[in-house]
Image 1 (cartoon, rainbow, N blue to C red):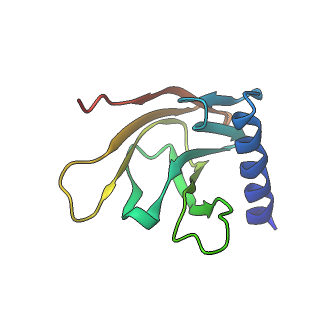
Image 2 (image 1 turned 90 degrees about the vertical axis):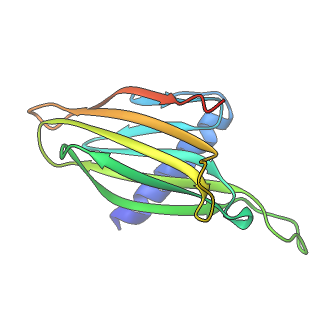
Length: 141
């Protein structure tokens, strides 16, 4: 039941961000990507197109949060279309007070150079509240 509610929240968060509407506890990297905080969890969402071989991977430093779920939701495509984009979601839950640095890399597994790198720093307070203190994309040029 919790997983279904998180997917519904992620869907509506993405919809609101596409419309340019932000919620308390939400942040944007750009007009279509960002995060949403809900209680003691945070969900990041990034555009993706695995039909091209690209996918998001994530590494973490620090134990303040744990990855609860990562999933991809495809955008609707017309019949007969060979592929299409969508959104990759990463949901983390607070585990203990402290910080965690998350590094999201978008690339192809057989290539050495990533297409994109996004870094997020999360802080968890003693009462379990999450904040995203920074969310930035590394300039690869």
